Each structure stands twice: as structure tokens, then as C-alpha cells.
Length: 216
Image 1 (cartoon, helix red, strand yellow):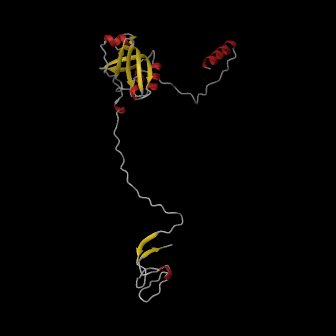
Image 2: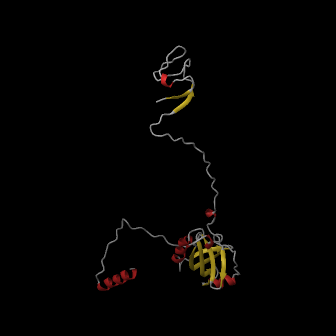
Image 3: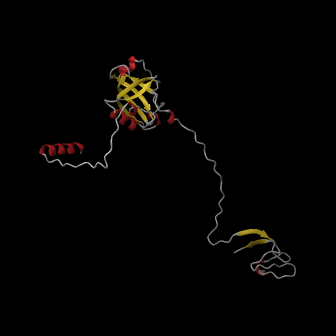
């Protein structure tokens, strides 16, 4: 689709029929200059962001990182996204493999196979050739903004067990059992009290033994 749109645009320009749309200056913005400060590689970021940085800074200013205090520019690198934790298997910025055609570096969610680099005091060359001349071995680690990506231990919140009593809709709440019988003084639904010689307002449910007092 992009190629077809480009060919169509070229034909319109050649025919002099390309539409001219005036830019709205109120919506226009300025693009800042991309310099070395924008090209530093942070190996703690996802592989997509690092891949875009390397491709966007090629050929200039060149995405860069540091190894043993020396700057190394990376121009070509193939992302290797991790499908499982084994696809990372290393520390951020660590070189986990050195081969004849390049070396492999660990990032946040995968790895990168670096194939073309440029040391600070040299020219562009194959990454494998540079690794051999600089005696790079597995375990070497590129430095960068990795401190803010360190893991933090978050304390587990303390949970309290809450006992929930289920009550059916319309059910009456049961109160503590109270003595209810001849000679016992307890509140009644009418608010009166009865005792020795008095009549109980609930004779059908007032035996001479304690029973739960129900309240509507």
C-alpha cells in the first residue's frame, strides 16, 4: 500500500496535478535536533524502543553505549524478542555470546545481535572483528541508565480476616437469650415490664425456661 501510494504521488507530480495543501501554521511544531544526548542506548528498555533508536540514529549521530568507560557506537543490530524467560537469560546490557559475525546483548525483554559498530577512536567495522580485536568475552557488560530499572521489593499488605454472617432477606435478628417467665423482669414489645404476680404478654411462648427474645 505504501509503494502504490508513492508511485501514485510521483505520477501526480509529473503530470502537474499534485494537490497543494497550505500548512496550518497554528498546528506546526519545531523538531529538535537529534544529537548524541538523544542517542544513548538504555539496555533496560524494551527491544522495540532500542531498535528504533539504533535505526533512527544511523548514520548520524549513531546510537551509542559504553563499555569499561569507552564509547561504542552501534549502527546495525538485529532484535531477538524473548518468547519466554530463557530468551533473556542474562543481566541488562550483558554480552552473552560472542561470534565471528557479531555479539549478543541482553535488553529488558529480549536480546540484540549487534553486527556493525564503531569504537570511539576508530572507524566502522564488523562487530565480530571489533570484539576479537578488543578481546571481548561473554560476561562483559555495557553500562547505561540501568539503576532506575533495578528491582524493588514491595512489602506484601497485611490482610485481615473478616467474618461475614449471611442473613436471609426478611429474617429477624436473634438477640442474646434472656430469661422469660414468671418472676422475670424483661422488656416487652409494649414497653411494659412484668414480674412476680404479673401476666406475661406472650403466654403462648413464655414457658418457665429461658428462650431467645426476638425483636421485630
